[in-house]
Image (cartoon, rainbow, N blue to C red):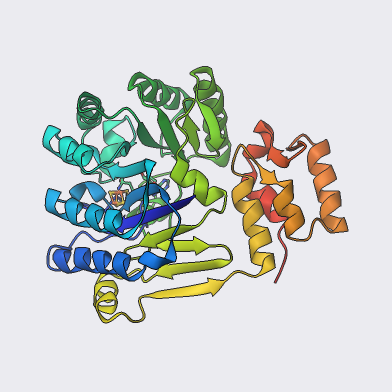
Length: 374
Ligand SMILES: C[S@@+](CC[C@H](N)C(=O)[O-])C[C@H]1O[C@@H](n2cnc3c(N)ncnc32)[C@H](O)[C@@H]1O
Ligand code: SF4
């Protein structure tokens, strides 16, 4: 199984919390950048010879793309690779871009899964976040998507927001349930260094909630969504039966993927590659076919650490086969394992090591306990 990720580094506005790679002043070089992504796909088409099971257009904001741009990008992907008939094709959209016309363009392009950035059900949050949408547009967007035949929709939410209390968070969860979507991604707010949010927090304009309240919100979400029939298949991802994101799952299970566009990452076996996170440098360098990416060969230690970091976040856990392929536990690691099983943080099955509900709250910390140094 293999996947393609296409990064669209354009956004209408700069959300105060976001440090993903994007630009809001892209009109000058928009065509050059799209042509460079097309060129990158062509240059790399022999890197993946097996059928493509998942395509993911992420960003940035893919929903700012015009019909012509979508046709160009989807066309080159379809012509360069063998695409599986059951391909999962996800497109990230922002509520303000969802119109009947756009939904039909997306449908015609073969997109069959939409990830929509709702973020919060509180108008005042959308304001300090500097989102380009108002709350009513979230409801309208999901309605338009459904009316135009999309039956696999994922909604993104953020919790741990300033002034979000438990009761309000429960209301947000109820509102996302009322939207009747098939998948929910809910992330705890991270205050990233180079963001306006960081400035707001440092100057006291916004106050983030305590870690304890964030944990309470996380635990409430686990119980609430489970009662509503959602399975938590990864720390931040919940799905109705049959609606796990195949694309994200393959990242967590270390399957190969090709990432094109500025800042996109690619992975194959023990090789990781990442494109330059600068739009101008990206399109100029791809044009010259030189110097638009860096790559590293992952050592066995890197692979071991990643196995725990990604595997422990999923409901499938870390596979025992993978552990033995990388040389099995050393004696100190065996002791750590025993302690975590005794404390009820980790569950051992015949095939895997899986975090319990209690352990999931500390997933990254527990992964670090198994880390090795190069
Ligand atoms: C890179 S964004 C792209 C999606 C789309 N442009 C949007 O704004 O909805 C992917 C998701 O990451 C999450 N995200 C981005 N920055 C975050 C932060 N600092 N803390 C928590 N979640 C964040 C948001 O939920 C967002 O929907
Ligand atoms: S959250 Fe989405 S729309 Fe906002 S800046 Fe980040 S990528 Fe762009």
